[in-house]
Image (cartoon, rainbow, N blue to C red; front, top):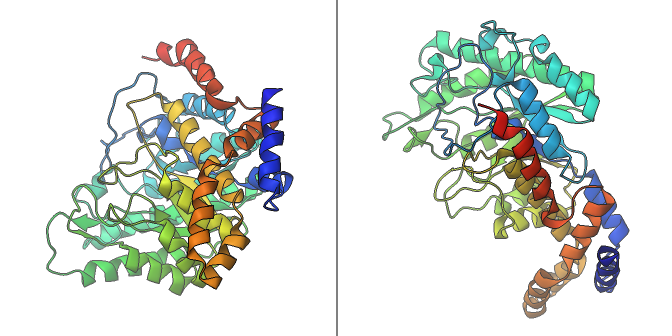
Length: 418
């Protein structure tokens, strides 16, 4: 009763500005977040001959109860999804193939190795996205893959990416929603290179070969993801922002921005409107870098709100494919999923509850005083009451009540895993 009463009071506050709350909640319900599976097992995967984590990726912490196999990972994901309002997606890496203990090289992966994932996705009604895994492998041990000077190694990874796109196509056909297949590589050098151009030429040639295999965009969408630096590639990364932005625009591919892949003071929110001027679609991996690309759990900070504002105020919710990418093993892994995803949705709701047209008019008129005043006042408007109502309407726990569910699950399920 208190939630309903608070909602009605909040509705009146927002409707004074012409904001239709029912329409807002209907639009919010259509927002689909791609939730990354690798938070649940610390990016280990299920390969029969799994290598140590590499590619500049590091997962810190040793919280008990991580998923040890695909069944446990799906169980954990399902529990997390039950605590998040709306219908969302699950994002897989190639290392999450199920091969029944058989060693299957990555350039030999097939749709059959992901049948269990597809059947599960059908059962719970989610779409699937995909990523080839170009790290944690002996052929990536020196930090180079698609830009490697050895043509044999390049060919291996080219074939892996082609296979991955075909798996993405399989997901799209089976689930009736296109799969976003995103290519990210760790390639780069620890120290200052003597030649930046040649590795980038090789990467371009490799991508051209990968995308020469035509796949219907009805089923699979191709994306490329940039990075500024990483552990072991502090001085130079082949697939930089400029490289992939140019490649995506020239080849009609989706460009993916990861919020942790830029300078610490550089914001992804500021890039969204520029890219949407030249591209019909854009993809995001929303993370939280702390001093470096450390992939902390997403919180409702200024940059997350600004990302959501840029998407909503530019009417781009249907153009921007939002995914998450963080891995924290220092806290309950399911709680990390729930906190991060609910915050992303909260940010979108916050953005939908702003008088964007009025604020745009103020800017056009040069009335910067009122623009700033209104934007600041809206920060303390009662959007929390709208959020609580939305959660109740979507039959998920309100406020921190979801944590009790996680604590119960930890006691009954996670603590029993050794």
